[in-house]
Every structure is written in C-alpha cells, then in structure tokens.
Image 1: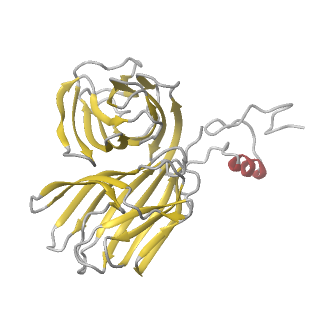
Image 2: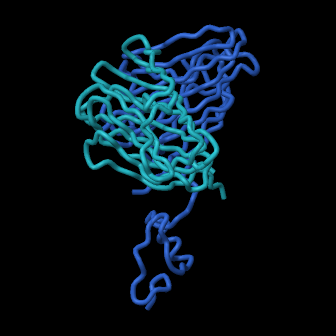
Length: 172
Length: 209
C-alpha cells in the first residue's frame, strides 16, 4: 500500500492573529514536510507574511540567520523581483497582498532537513492570493543557516493580521 | 460488553490516536468515520489517458480543500500552444473572461519574461509546446478552495515543456477564478486544437480536523 504523504496534524488560528505558531510539528522522522496553508481572511488588504523557525528547545529563532529570495507575480502589473535578503531575521514572502473580504488563498511550504541536527533547513514556497487590485502569487526559496534541529514554524504577519489553518504532512 | 477491548468504555478514537483491540468491522467503521489511522493522504481521484480529444473533464472532486493534478507527456495537435484549465461551477462551464493568471517563463536559449492577465477566458498553465515527436508538456498544478462556496478558487503551477524550436521551456505561476462559488469540475484543453495524447491525474489531499 502506498503511504508516501502522511497526515500529521492540522493547526488553526484563533481568529485573526499577527503570529501563527505551529509548535512541535517536526521531529517525526521525515526528510521533508509539506505544509498546506489555507488563508481564511485578513484584517485589511495588502501586507505579507514571513516565516521563522523554532529550535529544538521550542525557542523562536529571530536572529539574522536566514537567507531568502522570491518573486511576486501579479496579474495586474509588472512582477516584483526585489524580494531577497541575506542574513535576515525571517524568510519572506510566504504570501503577499491578501484581502479582507474572506476570499481565501493557498500556499504550499516544503521544509527540508528540519529533523537533521547537522544540516541547514531549507524551504520552497508557492502561493496564490487575491487583493482588490487582482491576483498575487509568490515563488520563494529560503534557508536557515544554522546546523540544528528545527521543531516548528512561526508565520509572522506584516502590517495586518490573518486567520489561517495549516495541514502538515510528512513525505515518506 | 467491551468496546475495542476496554470495559466498560473505550477511549475516544481519532486519526493518529487509536487505542485498543480492533476487529475488522471496527477498522471499517472507524475508517469510514475518518477516525482510524491509515497513512496515504495523497488520494488518487481519477487518471485519464487521453487520445485526440478537444477537452478532458474531471467532474468528481470530492470534498478536499486542496487538489493536486499532474500532467505527463501532453502532446498537442497544434504547434506552439499552451495547456489551459477552466472550471465548472455548479456543473456549468465558466467560459467568461473572468480568470486571472500570472506566470514567469524562461527557456534554455536565455529568454525569460512575464505573462499575465486580469480577464481571460481560461487559465494558461503548462508552457507552450511544439507538436512534433517528443515536444511534450509535463508539470503539476495545486488547486485551493475549489469546493468552498464562500471562497475564490486558487491555483499554483509549474511546468517543463519542449517548444517548437525545439527548446526546453519552463514556467511557474499562480491563478484565480475570482468568484465565490463551488467548483464542481476541472476542464483541461489546449489553447487551440486537440490534445493528441497524454496522461492527467487528479488527487485530493486528505486532511483531518
């Protein structure tokens, strides 16, 4: 029997939040984890969301330890190719430009090497959201440049708040 | 009388948290109630192997919040066209200029660029391909919120094709049907002409509360 995508848990925010924590979702024995993020609503139009990790002590890693790069795709204008940073305090964007009309959106975040104490932790992410101007999408890569075990994820809203749910899977 | 081997009452059963001794009927009943731990949450809904058709319809979507579609060796009758997607809403095909998409493309000859629309009659997903032998399209698409009547329906996609030059060609992007509706079907078609051959599979990503 094929068992390759294995559901681990679902986490839902308590309404609109500025930080969405998924604690102790890793350390389950997988090389790769998939997080399917369901955007439910936003407090205002616009904004974006970044990502940080929790370490093996369940402490948030907020130091300048992340490199990332991404592209913001727009149906209504030229794409934004300025999303990039080295030695930054988060990885971004996980998604951008959400709307406050309960219209939804979706993101897939793939996390590599979270359980490995001797490797950096990498992510790829791709999203689709909608603001009043039109469609926004993102394609993002990122790395936490610390050889340590990662146990969870915090998604941080910038300039607004979001209500979200996340379904987490191990890829076997 | 024991329940799952416990007397008098067994603990509450849920996915990932089963305790006790289970008969085949217990497993069957708990599985139907989504309370028995069975791994394998990438659930195949349907595979279609197509031959010389104008459109391919997937009209069984289940109740998943996330769908996943794979495209393998899509051959086109017409040269230099993209593979498209559009939706059925409550069994009615949406053919209006209401879809939005945005994708980044590039090819091995070094040509990169952007493609976008706020009002198209279909979503351009897989990059353009030629119609000669081995000029095929391969890729995948994720769909979000299709079965939620209060939400728009969103997509992300990524593809690799061989175009008419023939050169390797790629794109990745996002799309939306910005209408709060229940999508009841997905239609795949070429920008023009028939799909000569190929295999398309639709999966649901199952989750538990």
